[in-house]
Amino acid sequence: MLREIKGQPQVIDLLQKAIDQERIAQAYLFHGSDGVGKFMTALYFGMALNCLSVNKYRPCGVCSSCHKFLSFEHPDFLYVFPTVNLKLSPDGEIRDNDALKQYEAYIKNKINTPWQDYYFSGSTEIRKESISLLIKRLELSIHEAKYRVVIIENADMMNQQTANAFLKTLEEPPENTLIILITESLPRVLPTIQSRCQPVYFKPLAQGLIQDLLFERFQVDTSIAKSAARISGGNLKTAIRIAQDTDNSSRNKAFDLISMAAKAQDFEYLDMVSKARDSSDAIKDLIAYLGIIANDLCVIQYAAEQITNLDKADFLAELTHAKIADRIPDYLLLLDDFSRKLAGNVNPTLILLNLFIATKNLLAP
Ligand SMILES: [Zn+2]
Image (cartoon, rainbow, N blue to C red):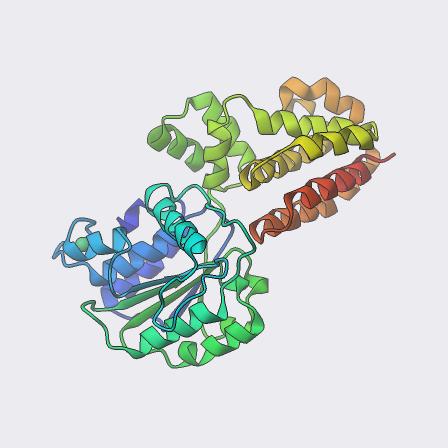
């Protein structure tokens, strides 16, 4: 199953070697952008170390240990991720009913459709109480596993105080415990945490690979798969959403935004935003399209036939001018920042307004 992880051969080789030689680092820090396989790799790595099969290719995915991991029911699999306030009891019971429902929905989504993101309603972080509970559980003995597996997702969403509380555990982890921290943004992880982990970099997936995965595993038509792969920026999650957005709504919205920004139609835009009830995913896709369109605005100046949005060539040719190319790097950085803020639950309307201002600045004469 570890070999089923596509597009990360160096990572898989590294981990396979660790498994074969049973030389496991105390803690790993998996970093790289979203939708490139970090979580699945972490899960399969933990499963491989515990798989009961005698087969060389572990994890088998069918033994009782693998089963428990895949259904997130293994007593020695501890999974921590950013949540709303769960009002945890001292023994780890979630006392807030609404938070419990959301927590369960998050896990269910992770098991059944891990390529989709689940969003809590409310601001999320890795809370001190979650880490305190984890530390407490790590003090207990292992139930049945050979290696206890701890996965901490979006480890950068831990504030300094919480991170400090976890440092001692990272420094002297209990025996036979595999700790994997995951982040999309290495610079946001405190240096004291970074220095105690072995970093493992996951690169963006190649366009051709995303295209093949969409075609083979999601039965997406080849031409749609091709353009979705191109727009995705190496992120399989984005590619799947774009491929499944059959009426092109995110792309149309991106062109609407560009057009309104170019004509400085502030009022019309505000009106559109006030009526929109876009999901965070829809805004993420809008941002992905804006990045591609910005790129087209630059490319069209010297190689018009190489743009992605060929059907919009006339529109783009009319908008573009010499200053845009210089402004694009900053614009792309802003887009990245907006995407991250969405994940951290910043108000979507605020992000839509900022997108408009940034786009107006990009296009300004
Ligand atoms: Zn197994």
